[in-house]
Length: 141
Image 1 (cartoon, helix red, strand yellow):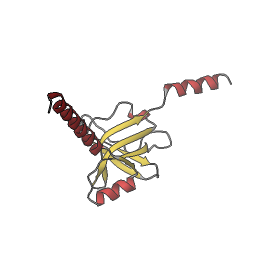
Image 2: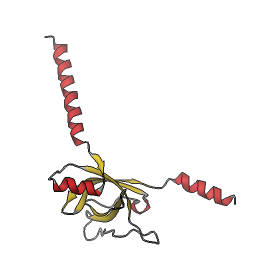
Image 3: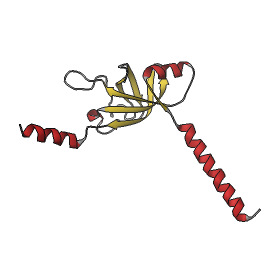
Image 4: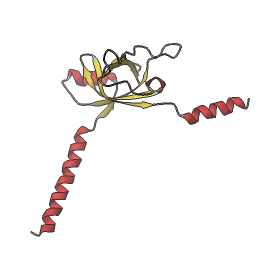
């Protein structure tokens, strides 16, 4: 075989290995009920859960625990999934910036002992453009 053929085969094999390794990390979107079922079956696979923060009548987040002086790498909060199921979520990292302003939260992780342990938190914050449209609309009235 020529040297160029061997190099081509090595590159193709490396590409296949990279594709296989990223496909193994892919997780699915589930609700908290499905995440609990997976945990009861012994599955340690990571899943995505979409939800909203539990807030009181005044708009304050309910159940949020974060004290950086005690433990800066412990953040807990209550999340309500798309089926309106409440679940405590624990994130062993600092609280994300603008967490209080988020409209929707996507967490990645798995259930452990009736608590969802998140590895990643993705926030969907309100758009600054929506606020300007509302202000312009109400200003014209």
